Length: 171
Image (cartoon, rainbow, N blue to C red):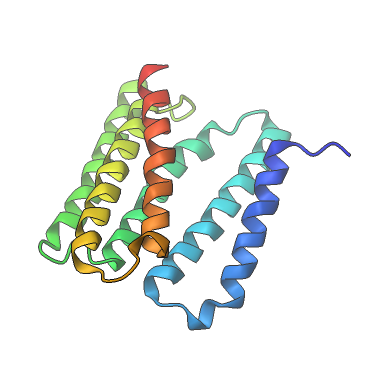
């Protein structure tokens, strides 16, 4: 039996989404947002595989994912009260990422070219937001913080987006 790594990723995301949907009514807003993010990742991976099979190219989906992925994750940080001191910062960060993406797309003159600087900048901002969220939560939370979903998600985001930032900017 030969299973491609892309199909394995789809299966893992589908299992995570099913578990999240089974407990969806018991979840708070931030965890519901994370289940939405898992559903988004499943949809993007599926459409990406479909685009590769049909058109041998998925770069348009990858470029659109830069913005949409960031908006969902930034909203997740908003539900975790990262922007409670300065709510306008949430809108500013979204606009900043969008302007950076549009500027790179205009400079490339083509949406069918990978926007690697936008992807690297988005990853850098997500790493900074994750570190800030961990910092805020460490001083507010009581008990074992290291087993809470908020900490685990932030650590996962730091690891994956640090790697993405380096790959996008230096390759």
